[in-house]
Image (cartoon, rainbow, N blue to C red):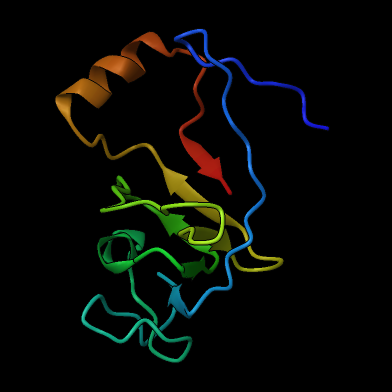
Amino acid sequence: MKKPVIMPNGKPFEFWDDTTEYTRVYHVACEHPDASDEGSGTEAQPFKTINRAAKILKPGEKVIVHGGVYRECVRPARGGSEAGNMIAYEAASGEDVIISLMAICSMSAMIQLRFALSIPNHHRF
């Protein structure tokens, strides 16, 4: 059993297991020679940025992000609707994916980072 996580508002965060049977899988690979945000998002023609996938993903779909450094602020257009209809972002097996926080998304993000002095400049997922 998972230990309860308490949100800043004092309410417990509700966990659930992802039971989604994904209907479509996209690929992002910034270092792939054929990567392009105008591409199809397949393994052979992956998107270049995570944001491109984030704009089109719908519940029941996922994206596999291949190794590389992604200097972007990822803003998903939507989220899943229930445990059986999620959206997933997944690092490719055995590959290092880094999303750099060197590119500030907005003034509010810059203000938040100013007060989070111990935050690293990248996140691995």
